[in-house]
Every structure is written in structure tokens, then in C-alpha cells.
Image 1 (tube, chains in turn orange, brown):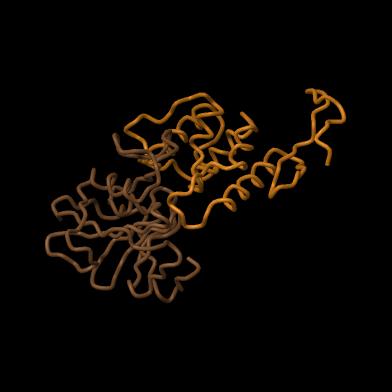
Image 2: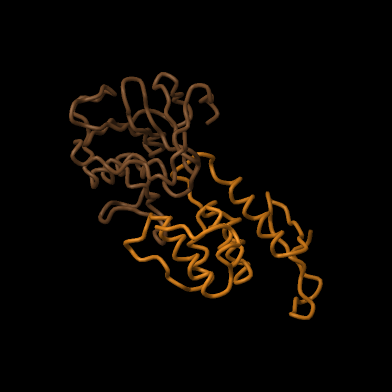
Length: 134
Length: 150
């Protein structure tokens, strides 16, 4: 596929939702579909069972590039206790939720972001279970 | 683990991304990682790299010291862990729970108990160092939320 766009994307005439999955451009109907494909790609790229492999990869970067549309999806993914998405949340929102004392304590960090998500209407407490206490 | 068959080990926790093998060995149940400092724990003053010797330094902050005699044998008054490496880079740390019985946290998966003899070196590399910590510094037991109900 040519990298050249057929027309400049505008709000009225947006480009299709694209992502690079496994080295190929894929097109999606909804942001949710794109997000979940990128989450799966991000997990695929991590060495299974590794404690040292970085969570950052090109799929993680594409999720961050989705911007605010990814925020409720990232919060729900965190509530499901899958993956580490808090850096992505911080980068998209510009909110530094994690204090130095919280670093490494994923339970506390998840609880703080979940509270923020509920307070700001991105998720509901019952959307994916209860808030996890730290 | 490709080389560790299910019949060779027993799952002792639920699968979780809340802590990793280092948090399991330290028994603080944090996710230790020298990078991604926005969300992961790494001790102050310890270099942020993946050398196995750096992990020895990191674990010294929670009172682990290099065993004077490098062996997996249990020592009275101490808990013992073993650091693995691949090409001098840290790859894994396991807890030595008894003679020929080790415990591991497998990345974002479960904690397992496994016979030391069943440990296949190819997966996590080679033994780098055995470390020990006096029992008075022992960490907390596995939080209830991660335990498998029997």
C-alpha cells in the first residue's frame, strides 16, 4: 500500500482507522476494534513469562497515538488486570497519577486510575468489576 | 514455559501482572523493572540496566547478600534465592523453598513450585548467583487476593 494519502484527512472526511499489525497495515471499523487488535499485538510482541521485557513496543506506541479515544479502553483493560497501561494513560492525559511511593505497586496505581476514570465518567465501577484496593 | 511441563510443577498463585519474579523473591509483591519509571519500582541509587550484577545490587537493598558458598543448599536462619542470567544479563530469579523445591513467578503469569531438578536451564539461562537473606528480613506472605483457594 502506498504511504501517500488519497486526500488530506479532515474531521468531515476522516481517514479510515489504520494500524500496523505484524508489519502490515490493517483497517478497522471502530476504535475499539483497533485498540483490541493493538493490545493483542502488544502482548504477542512481549516475551511470554518475562519479567524484564519492556511493555513498550510499536503496538504500545500506536495505542498512545490513538489519544483520548483510547483512554476509556485503557482504563477498562487495566480494570481487567491485564498488562501495564499506566504510562500510556499518563502520556495521553498528561496527568502524573503515580507518586514515587506508588511505583511498582500496580494495585495502588490501578486503584488511583480507576477512581480517576470513574470520577471523570470514562468508566463505571460496575463496567468491569470492583475497584481494586491497594 | 516451553521446557517445564505442567506435571512437573504446582501453581501456587493466580496469574497476575501486579508483581514479577523480583517482587516475588523480595516478597514485597511489586513489579521491579529498571525502566518505565513512571509505573515500576527500582531502588534509588541502583543503575537502571539489565546486568545480572545490577540485580544483585538491587536485591541488596532488601537485605539479600551473595552466599559465601555458592550452592542451592538451605542454610539455617536464611532464605535463599537464585539469580539466572543469559550473557550476563538478568533473566530470572527463583526462591529456593526447600531441598530440590524452588518457587518462581513467571513474568505476568502464575507463581509455581517446581522441583529444582525439573528446572530446564535453556529457558531462563544459567545460574548467576545464589543470594541469601536473614529470616528477620523475610518479606510478607503472598497476599490473599493472589492465592489459589484450596
